[in-house]
Image: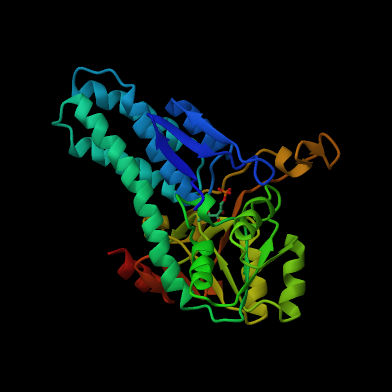
Length: 344
Ligand code: MRU
């Protein structure tokens, strides 16, 4: 299985996702500021993976704190937590992991500092391990929705690389494939950062899961031709009413799916739910560097000095979503009720 992120000899090690698929380069980080930078630069990306990276980065930062009391320790921890919170705004898993680490420190405040550091490291590793288990369970639930012969469209990368391993949307696809179902995956290229062509196609090809790579603007064509039976995507944040923030382009797919009567599923762990917000309108959308749009692999593909928009995510209103697959089961509309029940 692909190792997205590991803790080796007090270093955080991750595969550099900006270099895939042409190079498999592993980066080693020995301080939390560099881990924060790696999240910002998308060396690691994907909502659950960002959460795991933040937890490990915080644990790494905690190891280097020198403090004589918990109060001193906690002041320095706060700086680390704040730095992590500034990395990327949309995926709620980041804030979930930061809160988990803060709570863990607080719950063990009575321990001597060296032991407290050990506990924090173990909690980060546990978050990583749990993420893989969650994806496997979620995958099994989701696989029930897939039958042999299905052609599935996916967008962005919600695979092993976007998580600690196995994946959410790709976890469902993997599980169906492991069950012996004959499936075929249409992979959206996913401009501008190309997570589909660079990462999802790489993951699927590695496991011999049959795939066809398409550019984003081909999706409607293949839906109209009857080539797509269902769509599965991941999520960066899900509001209480079931509105879903995911990679830019997800909303257009969902609208097309409805027009063509194609089921549109979202696969995400419970840690992606943000029940504190009523609707997707309240989800902050990250605006990224215009160069991601004006350049491909460092090559300029648009005139210099023009106005560019680069929202990294969009929000799909809940009425376009057939069901939301989680590790606690499948949520069906009305989502206010079903999601709240699963989150309990
Ligand atoms: O900008 P990215 O690559 O971090 O965006 C990732 C996505 O939008 C994924 O679909 C989402 O995080 C789910 S990953 C299991």
